[in-house]
Image (cartoon, rainbow, N blue to C red; front, side, top):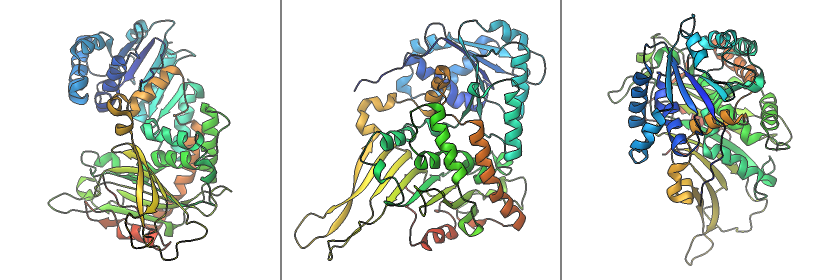
Length: 484
């Protein structure tokens, strides 16, 4: 199989927060890989912008170190690294003042794509957007990339959208959610809409329920101050998991077009029913096996912030009426795994009266680790002695399917940044999507805050709170086992 590299235009990409952790771990190593793949045409450039007083060469040394640490050794070609570093520039800038902005303006070029990555705290978005406009650095064809969180509630999301809208129109704003850049997430749309095999079955008549799991083994170490103001609901459900739910539940768009896709996702969000308190389970990991519990990392020793949440969600439309979507995400769990599992209904008539071992068909989309898909189907167990059924997977692992080229599949940040340069907003959230998601999320959070609910303590390294198991058991269902 020969991979196809889609060309992009010559660009200047300015990374505000270019010396920060996200730039060092993801953005800059990802851009290096795209350079190696031939996707930095002509004299495209990357310009770091941050408060640190650095020269071009000083910043290049930081980029060199980031490549050495976060790019696999097999992909570290010294000639390519030197070529990439030749595209790197730096401007020391004061995001809230006047320092450095004239220098950045002087560095920008005409007749190239200008993109600005806001890899900074959301509190600085307005200041940067205003100065890009005031100094004439951004023009009508420029693009800005903003990282989550997109507000912490509906009011702040509206305020943030309004600030950005003062200086940029919606077609220029790219709200990045790296989950939407994962290869398997995009393949979910291909599986649904490019195969007659699945789409006719993609409705309440044939699907029993859907599980969406994002499980992490790490805790909140080093992020306690941030996480205590966020929690699992704001940090994961309102954005990442909401987007996954939308891609599963959306109607087929009229075309694979950015606004057509986002229109259908918005319809799903607006069709979400309010979630009653009995369909919500919140947890907070305790101490165990010599490890510190959540409260040790929190600035509030009596914190009620959840590090785990499970929800039973209903989509109120014809396609999904009566089909529950079970969402769960948490930290310090047994294994690191993200997956979507679509469980189909039983056949309408069982012809094998004496058969044992029947299990539902399940389509499992694995997001991490080992991206791929499994379709669990029933076959006869080999051998004599009657009709004994067994479940086997039809497995499609990207590593197996693509062979050596699996290493060449771009990661989420690489793909999304190149989409920004191309001007393709399909995999980015629109402002009305963000606000609709918060409009659904806010009453849930306000409900447990008004009740004073405290999250249930769970053991680190477990599968989460006991009540989360009951959320499924009372419906006669079970969570899929979390395993890497």
